[in-house]
Length: 175
Image (cartoon, rainbow, N blue to C red):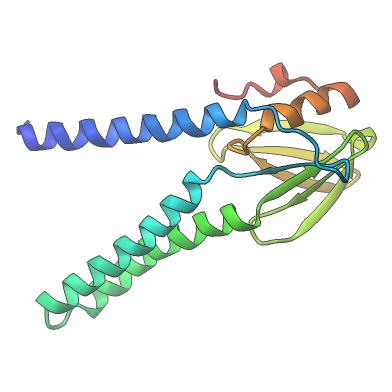
């Protein structure tokens, strides 16, 4: 294997591990409640940075292709389809996914901006899905999904343990 490939794979692996370490560490933070009595959790700023980087990459890649190739519109379309979609998805998660909670209830806005409210006393099931990285909570036919990289997620899980029979250990979140 050429040295360039080894270096590329090493840098990519290091970048992924670094990203994962940063967002996982931030989920362990303790977040204080605001003056209204609610604690608000949001995704780590790394999601915003990666979203804008993907948009920038799509733009630069497209300009470079269009300046050097005559009939490359299909290639530009597919690059925007891939990286543009990734950018929009990451930015929607960052700007719209929000979790507000207190000792009574939980209000979750998903990545599409749709909000749902659950009461801790009505919670029927809590599961973590490793592949998607989402914590799924169900109560009386309502389902909310929380991202594992919310800054201060441990604060939410501690409140969940106080107000329900579910524990953090049952979720088996990655450490």
